[in-house]
Each structure stands twice: as structure tokens, then as C-alpha cells.
Length: 89
Image (cartoon, rainbow, N blue to C red):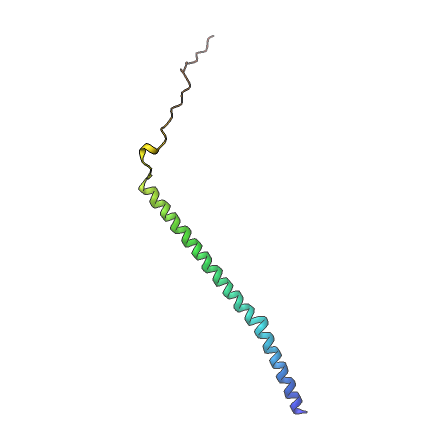
């Protein structure tokens, strides 16, 4: 009778250990791993965005690299002659 109780105890202990490992520890580990990966990806994206902004600022500070001949000429607006309006009473 004592050996049967020991066997049931071991079976229950193994079952609880199995449930603990596969329903708590493994999901927590996977979740932690996924959060770390997402944080790393987000940090990489932020770093790339920061570097891109730095490059854009450096290009803006250096001035336009387009030669003056390639730029479009500034067009003046030609509305014709301007006639000053005077009100007659």
C-alpha cells in the first residue's frame, strides 16, 4: 500500500512539474525572447532613422550639390502694366 502511494505521489509530482514547465516557464521564456527581439529591432530602426537624419542635415549644411546651370531660372510674373486705380467722385 505504501509503494502505491509513493507511485501516485511521483506521478502527481511529475505531472505538476510538467505543467509548470510547459504552461508557465516555456511561455514566459518565449515571451521574454520575443520582447527582447522586438526591442532590438526597434532600437535598430531608431538608429537607422537617426543616422538618416544626420546624413540629411549634413547634406543641407553642405548646400545643394546641383550646378547653377542645371537649376531652373527664376521666372518673373508678368501681369502687364500696372495702372493705379483712382476713385472719381
